[in-house]
Length: 113
Length: 114
Image (cartoon, rainbow over all chains, first blue to last red; front, side, top):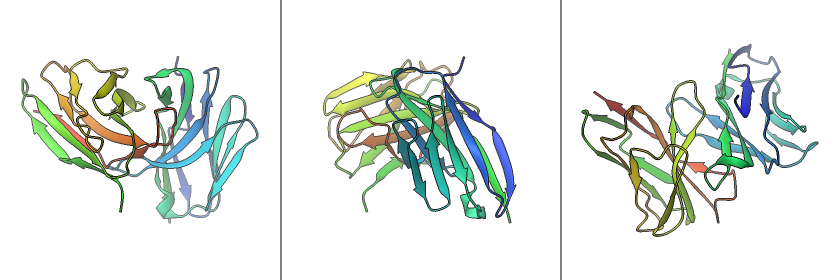
């Protein structure tokens, strides 16, 4: 069973059509949830850190929220340049390596003009 | 500008050959990491290093080796013992110790075994 699950796997939106991406986790002892953006053929770029339920972070058209078992990345009035794969990662005591990070498989977002 | 530089961007290898991927950072970060990315899978940790001359195995270290002789450099060698080396390899760094999820990534190296 995956500890971090992102949905949907892929999402196609029209420019200006708002939506949300989901990251759900089954780990206990959450020590942080992280969102990244990855463009094709490039390394991920850090976006947000969330630590506790109810916390929200915003950056331009993106807003990340956190509950006890999931996080949402809300995209408001997206533009074609928002097209990318969005990765979620969770830090927890059972995670890989000393950093305890477990990554989800990502949501591939396409914004059509 | 500070950042992480990975080279080469593309690399082709014949079976049985060792290859070394370079990773250099000028962010003055203490911790460095190597991840592997395969289609349909999340990033998986190969090795990480918190300080010079020290490194630890991640989840999928078999068939890989690393060194950390300088703070700025963390090269990864993919040995012939790695059974399925074709993948996208990502180097990353972070401030302070490894107790963070805020990683700075390089642009990646794509290795293809012929």
